[in-house]
Image 1: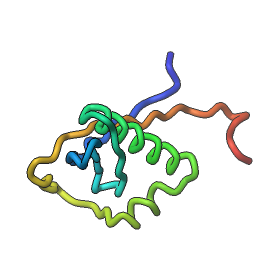
Image 2: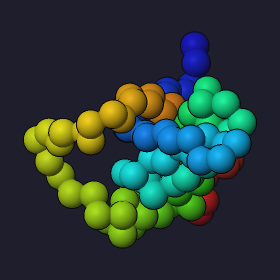
Image 3: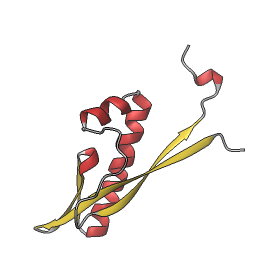
Image 4: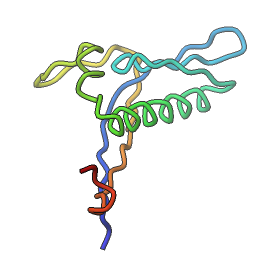
Length: 102
């Protein structure tokens, strides 16, 4: 029996070519990365987004970070034209009692 779960968020990103690089941006998280290919830029953006969200969860600052980025509860939101869907996995696991702070 596994003691973890994974939440998947579907964010969006944009990518454009700039000189010899592809620049990928995730406006909802205000994260920008680059890559030599479009695929590499998108993969780097997905990884950076996962690391950002995981870090916020570990530090207990996700709510604050999202509020500072302008997130508010909403029924639905249209994505900008020419954007791509980007699934972002955020892993969780249940801590053993010995790992929990007192």
